[in-house]
Length: 208
Image: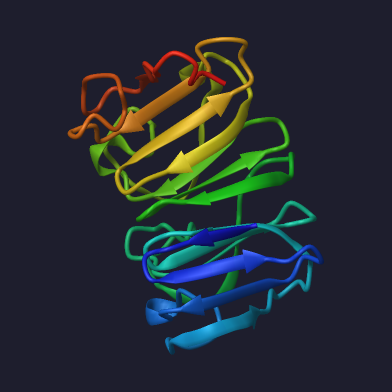
């Protein structure tokens, strides 16, 4: 799988190797420097574990391994790295998530990040203005916070998508399973409001 960030790209091979290229500003590539790369360069993880998924934000990245561990690197101005501070990282650094279930999926927005566990729980962190974290306020978080299942109709999450200032989630519910929250000034939530956490009023045939 592959993902595109602001000015960088990342890909995971079938064997679990991670490669990145593009603008390395603020450590976005995870290669230990801020240089640009015009061709894919291998990103080394401290554990040496195989990578299963990667997400690229504006100037940061997140990945998860086959053991369910999460690593972030790059810009951390708003806590999107999940390390509890605002210091950037030039190499992949493990993110502590207090869950017994392994992480299966990771996603990166412009300034926020999310992970989904094997139990279908969302953990989310980073910039929180406009309600993009879905926590019922506009506060950010520099560490992962679990998004309670009650806010998603008590269903298991199967997929997440993070934009610049809004988020979407798809659950395993038989209906009403597409949810959105955050900034909606351009109608990107489909619910007619800016800050409300709600089901997206998707066009007919769009509900999974």
